[in-house]
Image (cartoon, rainbow, N blue to C red; front, side, top):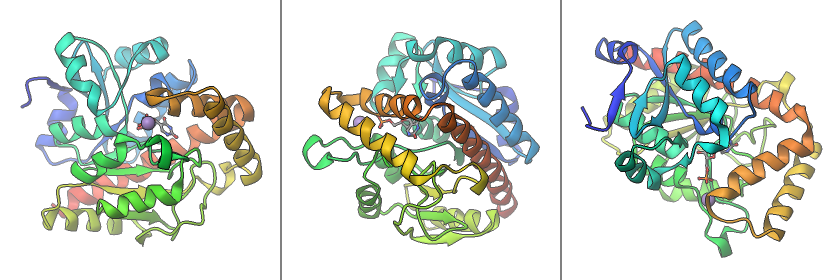
Length: 305
Ligand code: PSU
Ligand code: MN
C-alpha cells in the first residue's frame, strides 16, 4: 500500500471482499457549503450510499495522510474548519503530505486517492472544467486532466455554467474521456437538467453504466469516465434565475481580477448569495441523487467482476 495512504478498516475490508465502495470528495464539505449544512450533507450522503448497498469512503488529507474513509469526527472537523482547510488539487498533495498538513480534496485529488486505494466509483456534485474566457486566461481545471489519466468513474450532476460547457466537452473529447448522460442525451448543467450540449452515450440503468466502465478497463485505457446525472425535476431551478446569477458572478470575478484556485470558490459562493437558500437546497438534493446512483453502479460493477 502507498506509504502516504490510510484506508479506513471498513473500507479496506469491503475492497478486499470485492464489495461496492464509493469515494466522496471533501472540497464540497470545506469550501462548497456553509456550516452546519456541510456536515449534515456529508453524513446524509454517506448514509444514502449505505442505504443503496455500498460502503462510503470520504477522502481528504489530514495531518499529511491521504485518507480513504473518514471518521465522524474527521468529517465534522473538515466541516467546522471550512475555508481554513486548504483546497487541495493534484498539484497540492505532495506539499501537504511532506509537511503533515490538512487538505480538502477536489475531484482531481479525490480521484488520485481513490485510485491509490483501489476504489473505482466516485460521487460528487459538480466537476471543474474549462472556464468561460479560458482562451485568454487558460483557466482549465485539473479535474479534466485527471479524468484523462486516472481510472475512476465520476458521477456528477454535470457542470455549472460558471464554466464554458461546450469547451469542457471539447477538452474531454480531445483527451478521450467517455461522457455519459444518465437517462439523458445531454450533459446536465447542475442546477438544471439540460445544457443543450450532447454527451457521447446515454445509460438508463446502473448496469449499463457499469458495463461501459468495465469495458473501458478491459480495453486497458488509463483514464476515467464521466457520468452526468440530472438533478431530479422537483429540485431543479428555473434556468433564467440561475443563469442571471451565474452571469453576474462571472462578471464580478473578472472585474475584481480573481485568479487561480480562488476562481471556482468565488463563483460558487457568489451564485449562492445571489440565489439565496434555493441553490444550496438544490445542491444538497443533487449530491444525494448522485450518491444513490454511484452506490448502485458500484454494486453493478462488483457483480460483473
Ligand atoms: N464545481 C461545483 N462545486 C464544487 C466544485 C466545482 O459545482 O464544489 C469544486 C470541486 O471540488 C472541483 C473543484 O473539483 O471545485 C474544481 O476547482 P478548480 O476549478 O479550481 O479546479
Ligand atoms: Mn482554475
